[in-house]
Image 1: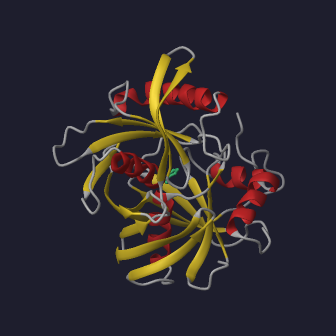
Image 2: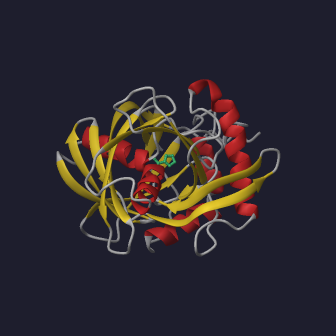
Length: 310
Ligand code: PYC
């Protein structure tokens, strides 16, 4: 299995070029469901240690159903198959350029959540135009065991988010352990209370919104991912969900550009235009770097062939 590893603001993406499972020729959403239900050991073996690393997202290339797209892709982490992934799409754009498969300019990519566009600005810089994103519920109060009531918004940006603004804990690197524990409890409380998407989709990510010490930066976030790691980047789908909330509250005008940074200080430039269905169409510009071109080996005698699952 040949893979290319990159990182987007510190958040790793592993693009799988060949050797993945046969997911059939259905829609990307159908192929993603098949990956989730029939091939858990595949994505765990590629993402978990010792082959993978905490926070890594996989990007399995698959033929697009739409002829205008340069590729189809299904994203996943060690715990779940994702609808879309913003940092992964920036990493994928830079990886496709590294392989000589795309040049500068605009290209379409098909994901289970819909078709997104990338604009390759230079070898490391990509602007992603995401699917239309929306806030679903405002000011939802959850009773979180061990923490008490927590209020936040439910929003969609390609994945499902519970967004707490302002964060109850300062969004600083020294508080990552504490924020991880609290956001896991919030995600569990949201899902126990049925506070997910309109069709019963569970909350898969939780965001704490905080302040940056840098006056040029609008806000800094901490994002919990399904595998209980935090996003080292500001999370493209999470930033999209957050833009939908800012727009719905009248706090950010269409076309106005802001910088959001992650808890470790990695920046995304963000803006939106109004969507056709009452939401927002986000633009997310970030940078990624290719780190490795690797052949993964799965020796049948290797006791950790499928990853360390503790
Ligand atoms: O950038 O959308 C994103 C993302 C999702 C999970 C990790 N990163």
